[in-house]
Amino acid sequence: MTVKVVLLDDEKLVRKGIRMILQAEPDIQVVADGDDGSVAVDLVAEHRPDVVLTDIQMPRVGGLEVARRLAALPDSPAVAVLTTFDVDEYVYAALQHGASGFLLKDTSPRELADAVRVLARGEAMLSPRITTKLLATFAAGAVAPQARSRMAELTAREREVAVAVAQGHSNSEIATYLFVSQSTVKVHLSRIMTKLDAANRTQVALITHDAGLT
Image (cartoon, rainbow, N blue to C red):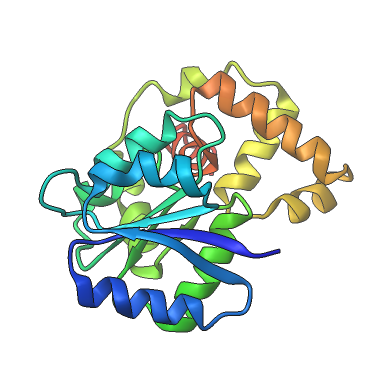
């Protein structure tokens, strides 16, 4: 299976470099690129990518708005913000807007390609430095207080799945741990996202952490 990628960045050299890195992988194809987030919805509609990599700061429409617009689409692709910045408010805002990943531009070529594959599988991907900052934010309690009541809407099994997602486990790992099929895990995750009003598994993880369940 070939993973199709759309790339958005206002710096031509950056776009070219990332394209070269990804195109060198036999299972990844950059199907389109653009210099601003204003073209994101049109490019997704035309090329149906699995993953969109977007810079966070662009002249007209930035990466946060790209994530928000694409999360509202039916069958939306995974969106990862790729940036030189690891500022806390950018990280949390990107995930709240529907992004599934937050990667720094100093990520190695191998890590970037692997991240694209992880995102295409519907899983979350954060650079290690970003994960450290995000966990520190949760430890400080600087997140929404209503998460616990939202989690109360889940069944016991759904909470188990949500906690496993928050701990970073893949669907196959969750299926093995719970002695169920991967399709059953996907059904649980779909119901969890509906009940929590979460756009993706990354937001499920945020709410679960915020509720103090991990």
